[in-house]
Image (cartoon, rainbow, N blue to C red):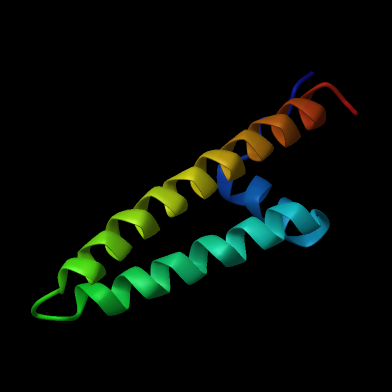
Length: 81
């Protein structure tokens, strides 16, 4: 019998038990904070626009890595490992 676990619960488990996931989540939050500061400005310089694009790409890469870890954790739980 397989028990379905919600994504939020899986994220919480990983935050408490997996140092790599915790590090990625902290880095992701840092990029979010930086993007929020940039978006609060009325005008961005060319350099800031480039920084914004780079932060978005880095944030997306981290999100993808976190998702893969989440899926791996889900499979491990569902298979009983």
